[in-house]
Picture 1: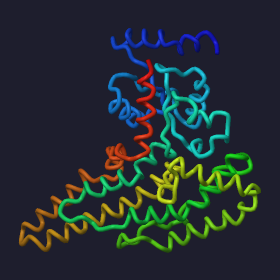
Picture 2: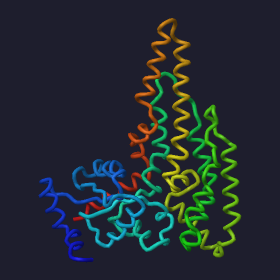
Picture 3: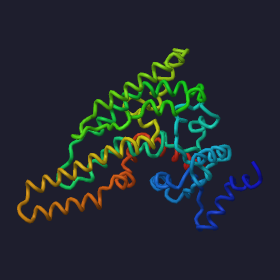
Picture 4: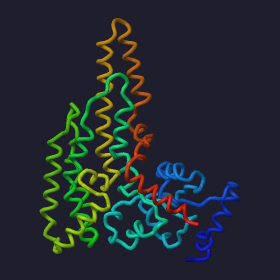
Length: 330
């Protein structure tokens, strides 16, 4: 560490810098990218308002986390980081930094794959589904479909995390990510918002192919059994396995398209409700009200962006527990 890094990592320097720039003594919580700011600021505001300034460490991109990892050795109570877990939480031996998520008290992480994964939690989706309809709730099986998807990919997640943890070069994450993606052009929901069993079957076929291809490389059955128990101890199970996979694909490739279907169905049902409950010119007026409501208030991207219901979820609580442990130090 050069002299500048030594100064930057100094608690006295950081506190003095904050007093000079804001008149308030505080530490720094560095994050990967500005797009993560609201997630981590939400943590600070809920646990210790004003205690940390949340700052993007770099310009983002693939190297953002790599840059933060080099700082892990310099961290202390006033110089902490918040990162996406990616596959580090599942595979703590896959590189020299992965284990720091567990062993380093000053490394906050998402536990789920990324902040996007938290939006896919049952707590968040339930709130989103309840908040947009105007007259009639659009009955749907979105949560059921995600549950089936999660159970379908769970065996592959178990196998991948074992193999990737041991030899990440031989078992790169992209092979696993491809294996659990929805078949091209398919959706989790049918047009009537029920579970698309054909899609689930298509995912299962791909998962089975992945398992058949790589399961023979598990040569330590006892060790693999212990690995499965470790995953359960970490809170990873059939019901939430999808939240520990690529959160960016889960949000953009699965959840958003499904939510758009549900929102559109909600708009159509609200229009039908107007038809049945109003007469004459009032029908047109009320239909315009419905259209304006969905146009102004029900953009799926906005619904997702503004949702913080995941704060009640168990893995958000794990993040808060780690933060409380940091600030409770003398």
